Image (cartoon, rainbow, N blue to C red; front, side, top):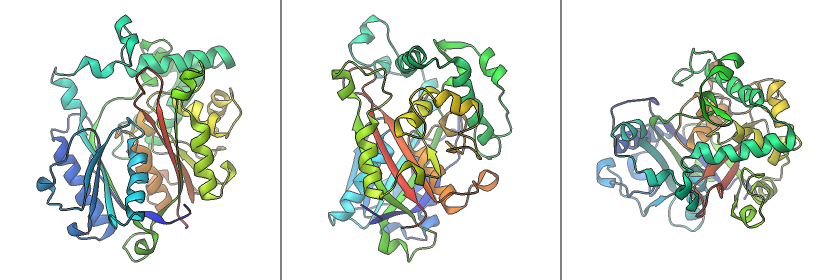
Length: 379
């Protein structure tokens, strides 16, 4: 893949709880911000991908692309949407594709109309297994059994990400420190997850504009190049009876992404990993090979995911402490870091980033989809 395509526009709306805006308004704002960021006119968008299940009202946005599609594979959808955008560009179907997310999740949750079935993961729902926290708890408990990982290790993940968010205006954790003692004292949600092990729903929109690397060089902002991408699916580990030992099926995704980029993990400056729960980035760092299996907890406890550590991870606070715009949270942070626009949270070295997405299932709990990208400030 190399650097055939690049992200040239980023639009991030206000992110928070109870913003009072509909999803389509958040998406429209995000698109407007991305166009302004890239210095492109509205009619430059000739492809549109919505990272969700519903159709898009293009009239409301004033868009007239060659295609408009919706995609849904949970939190892996944003990375998938960028891969799909690149494929459509390569196929000659578009030159500038908008990949967009925007939902008013807190308004939906407070309406009392939530579909309980959407929280089920296959037949175990019949026996009371509901919600993403309960299913991810299996990964955490299995990891604890195999490697001696503790609740304090999970707490180190939460504290590390809050420390990043402290410096970042607009995040939920801005100016709100979190200690390990506070993590340990927070209420149990589903064993072993406490409150601060879990993300919160937020409202907000994010849009990225993808185009060719050639066109990117003539636009306003510094391009962020897509150097490699890969996908995997944890259904294979379900068939093997090893689904809980594996947060995702990362091996094939990693192999493709790094082969395309011509890199190894030693070449990665930072990781922006999908983090619905504290166990998630911990297990992903192990699976990608930044540390050995079972060493993710000690890595966090010793500061290895902090700004001066082995692999700075979720440097804007991630979904745990920044905001939950599904897999776009990490993409947006990677773009800002690679452009040098992360303000007080800017890393000393930020030329390459690993980004991951994770979610949905293949008919039964914990059979998550996975997608990853390697982004770079240089082609």
